[in-house]
Length: 81
Image 1 (cartoon, rainbow, N blue to C red):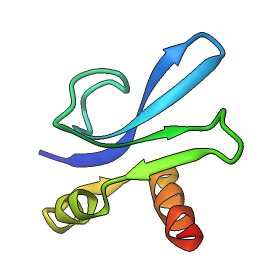
Image 2 (image 1 turned 90 degrees about the horizontal axis):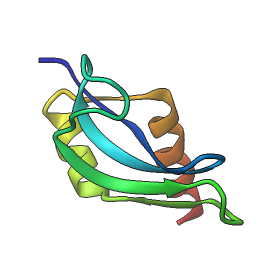
Image 3 (image 1 turned 180 degrees about the horizontal axis):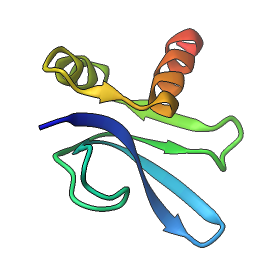
C-alpha cells in the first residue's frame, strides 16, 4: 500500500482550511485517511501551520511520501521556529 502525507480540504466555500493527513495514495483527496497529524489555515496572517513532527517523521520512516505542498509547509515551519 502506497501511503502519502497530504492535505485534506475542510472549511466552507471560499474559506478553506486544511488538515494534514496520512492517507492511502489511491483514496480521494477528501476521502478515507489513516491519521490526522496537523492542520493548515492559509487565511490567517501569517498562515497557521501546526504539524506533529514526531508523527510525520515516524510515517516517513515507514515509507510515507509527503506531497510537495506538505514538504514546503514542513520546511517553512521549521525555518520559522
